[in-house]
Image 1 (cartoon, rainbow, N blue to C red):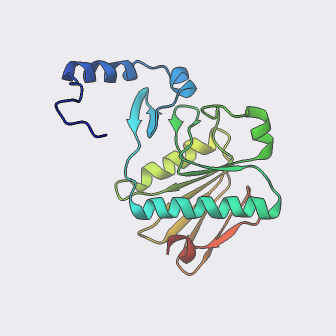
Image 2: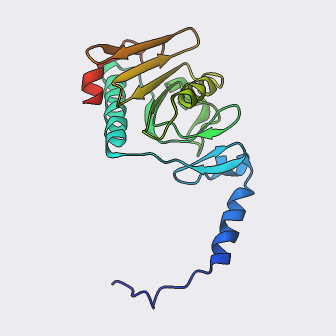
Image 3: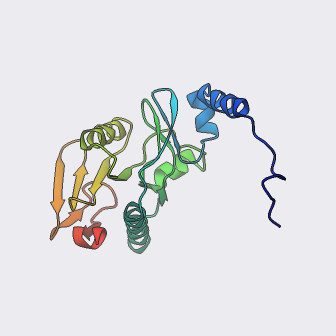
Length: 194
């Protein structure tokens, strides 16, 4: 049964401001224990993740499926996540796609927020993202136990694979490969972004 607008409770603007203020006073530990959907903890404030387009979502889903199928078919184990929260040294982020090794699953269990970065992370760059910020985010992940970050630029048809030792770039017509995690995984850039 649908309610008419006259049957819906009225929400006072002051109530909305109070709710927002409560969220702004959350500690990082409180946020990690009960992370809000589509929110990250950045510089001590809750920030809504945005910029998701159909293309972004399609690539996120495709890469997540490919990593999951590969880890299953090779017996490497672990788990693949999309949009799951993890703590870096400074923030709580929600990588677009992330892989966690079986060893780290055994260590951390099923927590609301992973207390470090995932082993392998992919960020799909949205039209509103700034490239410099994405490379800084990759460095942030690597500084908190991540071994490898994929930065996927859909409009430029580029995939950068970043780890502690190198940055490799793959473009249309080439095949992107993992370097340290999910050994020997590869995918054609055209297949991923097509």
